[in-house]
Length: 483
Image 1 (cartoon, rainbow, N blue to C red):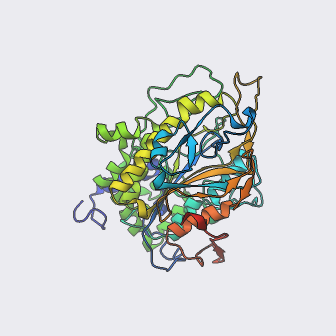
Image 2: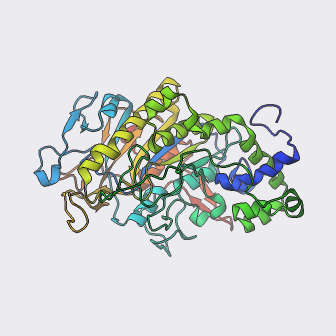
């Protein structure tokens, strides 16, 4: 490849063949650059080139054990942990988040985000799409084409690509239940699968292991676990699978479709001129060394890996930093698959020993690097789950030796940093049990609007379906108290 790394270079035939590896990367041909220039130019405003890192804690973070402690409440409400002071006077958080406590001048909280569901699947859809009402035809067991599009899909569809990169990515894997069903809410839904975000599959799924493997892997019921030594966090394979020959490539352009399993989309794209342009841009993703370095985070300097943590949480947030610095507008980071944060039992030891330490370390390292690189003002960080946890500690002795908390949609704490938000602020409050908003209740629609605003989208922004019917993006106002 010659010339600038993100332009349109020419390629040898062998390099063109390697484009088939795009499907293994998790990137369809329609996910790159300006393939949808004709039908996706719904946002014509001037881009502010800001980025968002949406950290999603599948399973639901307990507000009492993180950012909304109730130390004066009865024992069955306050739990086992103690609050500690932060660098912001009057703001206390959990004792097991000491590094974040030192950096509270960089971040803020919304303690009053609320919605109506205690169901994992619908909760995922609500918080990943920013829409509180159930879509028609919703199925908790699988994604449906009638689902609301995810925030990542909307960002991918209506924000301008930068540096020849897809506008939105999800790392390090899709959200999958231990039963191997794919959790709804992550995809294009009504927009169509061709508008899914770029799924970067850097981590293979293991239904028996939760958390930040390998250092902090655990089982919710404390059953013995074996971390597969072959399970690695790595750049996806960019080469063609065995069995696809040059001759077959010559005979059928749909070789790409065979790899990507998107026959309809590719057949449609193959007859248009933008297909060839998008293919060249896709190939540039595979051949540019800068893109490979973004994804190959385990090869970072030892000092960097030690700061973030040599585990899937640390690697994921480091990859997110690399991607937004390279030009991806929105990166959704799934910190833990298989509803890792679903702490019905053994809650206190698991949060203390397996979940909060790697989150505290990796998120603090991300904040430090965004500050040192001058990127924090232009990068919004959001951290949330599908819901919070019940005000009262509960115990399910038939499943767990020790107590925990159950699902709780009425309130959760959401973490914000950068992107124009002011550090050291708290928006909203909860009642004395930490169960319901007491002041300044916010909805998922407000969360989504905060993200879209940080991406530079105007309030009139819309996406268009295949019939050219516009769908308004903003369904709430950004959370004003953060700014």
